[in-house]
Image (cartoon, rainbow, N blue to C red; front, top):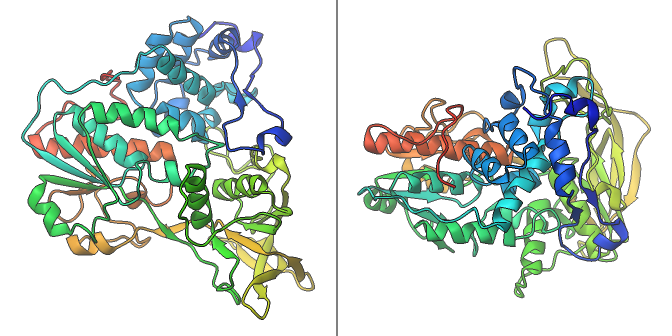
Length: 488
């Protein structure tokens, strides 16, 4: 795979970025791609390692050494087929996945790992540019109808796989456009929405039916779905936002990240009627939460023209190297600095927000924090304690809560009579994605809790196999690890 001595000859090279002072003026993607020679050299670094642990790192089971080798050989169309054999939407993962495959790369033991994610992105972009990705309708239709609830990556993957099996698939989405958090949670500067639209056009041409602006559970009840469809798969995500139950949390200016980001995406899309404006312009912004969503809030606030942007993280600052207790090939918890962090935010670690402060009109004016430390407790989770004498007041007119999600909404699940697990996710079999109600399946964050886009696509694909088996007695759809090469 790759060039025998490629990993010795070529160093890792990633895409570069447009300068921060230029890119913050708009919401366009700002990466500068490598040229074809540089990309082939990056593919050459894949080192024929014998046991490709990148496979175990990838929830989709992508055939990574195979498409790396095809890129090195200059066989881009072959690379496209290999990549799409396990991943319905590499244009999404190539932009948004944190690349657990790279942390599991054998070369990464003592060198920079192969730039797998960037190679993946360039394969699919080359394929679109050359017209290799086209609609393929199934050769024949079954008499089975399937409803997919939710049009995020899990729902779209399940829909395409089930459509390939010949079933008539209808995707329901309560928002005005298809895409779920891909469209309304991911800022355009990370993924422009024409990337979704070009794939959506292919899915529609393949025969998938999309119905937007339909809130299933409200506009359509569970009983209606059971009457009309032979199977239903719930892919609605984990959408219950985690709150911060401290004094002042009801002040105007304390805003959930997943209210702030979707509104801005609609604004960028040209939507005029947005309700109460949630903007960071000329404000001192504090983003509470250090994950990807917090990073997205930082980049968006800077583009709004915030006066200042600070980022609070309750956990201690991680190191840049792999911790000794998280050995290769496991995912390491280390400091990750995004492009948004580099655009002008100041980061604070081991800090806890105790109280929001407001004026007489109920507007947020500041907040109070204290430093914290984590004390290890044998056999238990570390104990969080406040450091005495470290209280501090901060000026703040917009606090964005990027604290993650606590589980799935329950309206539709309750109508079906579905069971939940202890984490408020819909309970389903690990082996076949079935719920306790016959004909009702669940996949993605709604089953496993808040997770990665790559897991969502994997769950949608796996669920589709088991739904097809439920409907037909068997399935020819691929399961992870089978290495099948379906149509692209």
